Length: 123
Image (cartoon, rainbow, N blue to C red; front, top):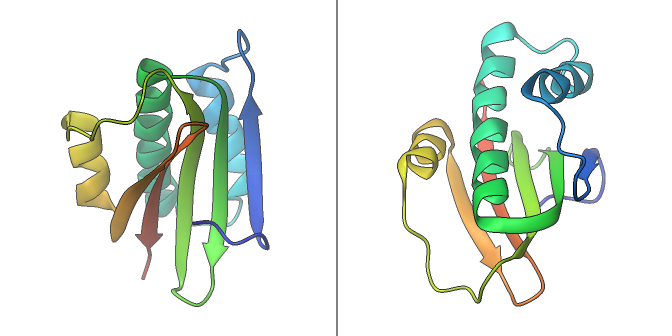
């Protein structure tokens, strides 16, 4: 879902999950120059997707931010290793929040990995 160009990634290995402050600092570095309200929205979506991955899957977790210039959007994605076979997604509070804040979002699942992505469009 994220184009190969104009993207950055943070790889989180087993036993090496960064604190919320460390993730916020990494995001701030990547989003230098963005408006504070846009950075805050991105931070909420990143937090929800990482929390979801950590709760329902195995590391490594790969957080990726990518610019989709054709759609004028930022795509946030988290890839992980599924704990069990994919059996559908319930929209808990976190994914409902992602749904409300993003232009669109989705799940790409296969036996080896799951990617949950959200497309964010800014004025």
